[in-house]
Image (cartoon, rainbow, N blue to C red; front, side):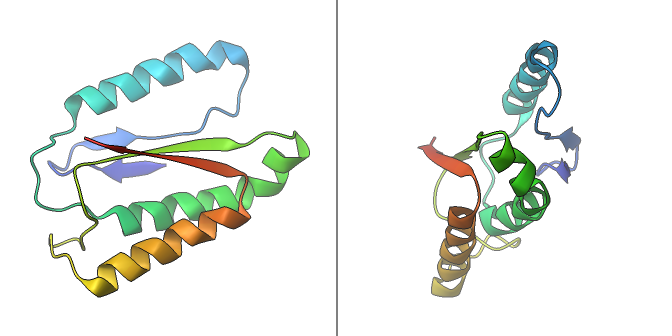
Length: 115
């Protein structure tokens, strides 16, 4: 999946569907992305990120389950979810909770890390 970080630099997040040989390069890519994401932004639009990720996982869920596997989703955040403009509200929080609940029907384990 492609996404733009807060400075509009293209970053690639993907799931390693390949062989074990692919894992080291995927991990290096993740490390690079995590080192280069700015952590001092006002916006924390987690709900939109979860929606995007969920769409991709829904398509692959049966394949993942057939292999008796799961996806581990690690959410690293500085705080409360906001909309794209950086505003936090009860509506934003309810939408976030709804998206998290959608993952309960998928072969996904979620880890939340507050930074």
